[in-house]
Length: 258
Length: 374
Image (cartoon, rainbow over the protein chains, first blue to last red):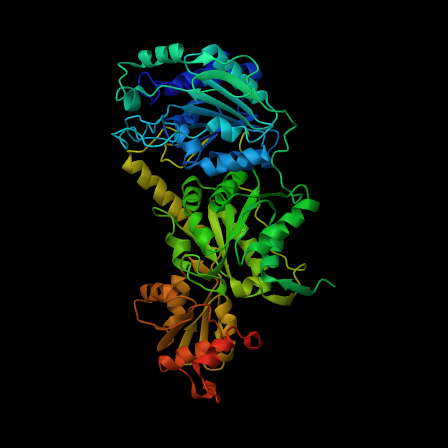
């Protein structure tokens, strides 16, 4: 099948835990790429460090498996040098919003024509389950056994400081809307961010009381509700898309003009 | 007539452009900021040259990795503190095999240090600053013309070695203006050696240890060892083609002075009394060349803008002790050199100053441009 052409199926089974949400994202991404005609001649993946970062190895594209937190500088530079390429960043919440936070803040300002898909499992999974920048306050983790002390970062707020950006909140349970959001994001002229709530059963879910990955998926079904149409802001646990004013991407070139 | 006054930092940019660089990403930091500023101006009138001022040096270093993978000869410029921030990206460039050039216009450290004063204290950082083992190629010019020439060599060495190559400079050299005639200089340019992204393959460029097909090899020591020696041997072989140094002054003298970068220029008044070995390729060390030359001299003095970073390397290379004249705190002048030589009992009586060498007088002397000749 054409979708399978986007994946290196001979390397399956993947390295991810049974029940991991990342594979669900990869599946939908491969489907969308097939629909959009994205292939190894016109598309590059840039992945971060964390379980999510392993995605590049399983896709039939050239990919750059970057240093922790540095997907955005790498992706922007690739897009600047090769504006004809589709550049897709895939990374986790820690990579994107903690160590990568400063780059997010500034990539937003420059509005490069890149798409970020964030596997937001609210934890640092690969290293065993430490609190991350999107971990809800009070969550018990390896680095916060008494409950994480701080409120999570306002990812949506950061992205929406760019009035021309695209922000979508979805979950790996909501496969149809997630696929739609990824497709729209890939077609958005400028910076697009797809924030995907995704389960990490082994290094987060079990510790906070879920018996299985399916339990976590069902929790997405019951806890997340679609925001009213036309919402300019999504509340926690609301699914939806917030679109800024689409402008033709400037690729963030300074080229001496600023 | 193409001869004109050129600044050291400007010559670096001109050399990069001549070498075919088409992507610069950087962050302002004294004393390198002219390179950023002039790259921005150049980009405004040359749309094929892409410029991006990044939010910090970490972004800059990672951006040039991405730009190079995408197909552009890429470079950045910084100073000591920014260079420290770039270390992780430098290691990544060595691991993955990405040609690029990093210019470090050194100042006095450590920490934020003395932002406008020349130093040479980053030598170890250029060799060992990142985690793990890797083979750095580093050049350090001594004149504005050499800033131009060795920047071109750096881009060539980067392509051949597929690694980040470093050009060292310093606050004095970077801001030095000399009459130079750069246009007639002919150095063959090595074209891009790395196939750009999305050329039809499915390569995985990974900082994590992997097999050739992209599967993680994070527990395979044999594979690591095989890849490591292959990469190291290749880069050492490339570096051999760039074994630049100067051997001159009074070759019949009893004592050999080793000096590099701007120090070699400041020390020129010593030329009648000492032989000179000037490494231009700082790393890998010029073991063969220096061992052969040093064997002719009873004594060796290393004059440098640090507390013996290169002196230690020379002692390791030659397995013999050397004498040291450290020029610290940005006080890089012929007066400071004379004091240092006197301190170790190596000042030729012909060079002893007739006036008083008071501390106040020495502080006022600082970097004496009039003594920079040759």
